[in-house]
Length: 158
Image (tube, rainbow, N blue to C red; front, top):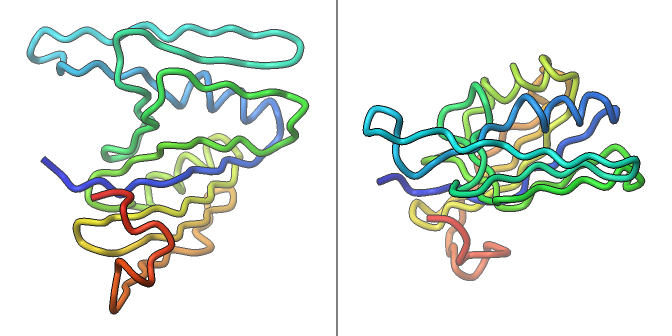
């Protein structure tokens, strides 16, 4: 069982690119792997002139395609088109830590920018990642002398 590096994933780009990422880049995850009889839960899409919502039932959330164990731990993600070109995804999770390589590939594939700040209480570090259209701008692991005191949210992750 891994420690989880948890935080917020911000995604920035043109509306059509953001929409394509939501529809193609996130896959519902069940609790039981296919090898053990688990089935991938369906993704429900509700689109209006003003919003796009993806949701799933019977799932733990969404797997971020082409990454190594990166997830959004939400059963429903809503994006309101009038909120501009930034999508904020709470409850981002990565097993052990964040590998920026696969995220850079996704950033390039979908023509998007990613920004993540995440906490890992177990190993007592934070990560600050920023990627612009496939180029890693920042990949910083932040260590603390006194994690509980210095870290802004020391109870997240782990």
